[in-house]
Length: 400
Image (cartoon, rainbow, N blue to C red; front, side, top):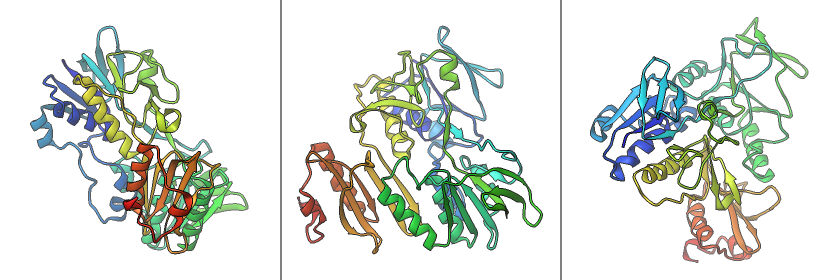
């Protein structure tokens, strides 16, 4: 049985690895649009962007590909899927036959729609080349505009401030990270970034961009134009579902899959950012853009294709590093639940436990990773200590 994987990011690489670990003996072909070996993307906005690390960690290098007998084809873009003939067509004119196909296509950064959005100096961050281009602009005294107050934008802002770059962040919505954080945490991040010298402007958008006089770009903002040395756009991911739609797979906020990662075609699977899967913790379907989900979901898909019984239903978890903060979120936070505070936001180490009907629903933590570890156990068990116990810092949660 030959397996073809379209997409050589976190999910695609882990599907290949998981297939071999699960005992698959057939062919594995991995098609990657980028010219690099599969690598981890999270460091691009942090250690690699700052220069602390030269390259992001490689997920599947040449020696690993040889050892696992993976036919990795860098710089090869899939352009069509023939479901009847079980064949993938590529932009270079080649074709690859499959018995099972995995779509790990992820997405591309959303672009601004205003005039001047395509000018040189307007960047997004998705690839190593993107990271290198932005890093060249992180020079002390330069001015950087970040459009989008989500995770990518805030991580870039933190990295740029460490490099003594003047930073402005524009967020179109009323608060930061509104899709994934309750208001209390949005306010905490807003306060921290402003204390670090970031000019954060909420409910603000870009009207236009043009060439500047003193700096590279002039950006039209409420109150008048301002000039910057670079603009970074971080306003979300445009899912790469084109191949799936064109071949008739069910697509609804991503490629619709079951708990084994199977699409509406039993010979085609999907994993990673692009997959929309049932999730108990979300109370329905969930499409999760996170490093952990891309890896774990891909491992499950590899096992399923190799013949294992799989019902992937992980608790959503993601993290972000900004300044000296490690923020982790476990579960699906609610904007309606206030939560029980443990620790002190002023001291920079605290957790908020969201409880509903006596059960833990989510936990959000800043610089207290041990709280996440014990909360995961409670979530799986469907239990939770009383709020007064959670709030008492003299009580060791790992002993409960």
